[in-house]
Amino acid sequence: MPLPAAVQHQLERALDDTRHIEVLPQSAHIGALVTGVDLRRPLAPAEVATIRAALLRWKVVFFRDQPLDHVQQIAFARQFGEPTLGHPVFGHVEGHPELYSIAKHRTANSHQGQAEQRPWTGWHADVTAAHNPPYASILRGVTIPPYGGDTQWTNLAAAFAALSGPLQGFLEGLRGEHRFSPPAGAQASVAYQQAVRSKELVSEHPLVTVHPETGEKVLYISPGFLKRIVGLHARESRVLLEFLWEHAVRSEFTVRFKWEPGSLAFWDNRATAHVAPNDIFALDFDRQLYRVTLVGTVPVGTDGRASTAVSGDPVLAAHGAAY
Image (cartoon, rainbow, N blue to C red; front, top):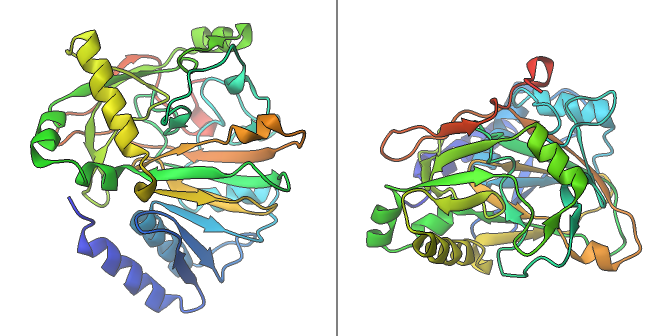
């Protein structure tokens, strides 16, 4: 399904009401730089509406020169939804339960051995092992290496639209099992194993979801979390998933962002996947970012069936989190 015209019209109307804001596309299908707004202060309702419209249209929006602190980042996020606990498995920043530290050597990256390197290795949407994955994520750059460390996003609605009609119809009837595990070929560290066992999350999501705001069909195949297609034989599942993952990260569906201190990326977790950089581990530079995720709803397939929780509690707001 192509992008609904209403989504573009919504952004155009919002920009008419906020002439001081510019939305500058960064690639054909995904990514826009937003300028003309100061995120350190409370936004006017029209500014919130413009940023939301840009997010729906471009799937990830970027901001430069926004030197926010922890409190300001959380306050910015609250204007768009209810922040979750920093991470349902790997914890949060002390004193700021809404924040998750994206550090170079965090527990989520603590694997032993060399992961098998394939085109989709490392790509994921955030916390799709949960019954209700976050609807959006907001990542703030603080300590940024002078080179290296870029992040990439892909548009999973555009990826679905590019598939053939017969394959689209077949995929719409399938569901996939999502869970936490280390990358293929790597062995989880003891710390990783303990965290995942203590707060296990497993869910079955439709392979094709309907975006709750735009109505787009989305290829919901988070490579880092999706382990098998329910009901298919093991080889059928593996071959089909590898084809879909390779398709979804094709360069024409993606955008690449070079971080600077004070940069923010705000992405629609319902329609994108992203990949953290591996090149930072070949560099001596430190890298520190902070993420806020916003409470999401349970995904729904094109047949109207919602996702199923296999294990674990929903991801709730930080003030009432189950963890």
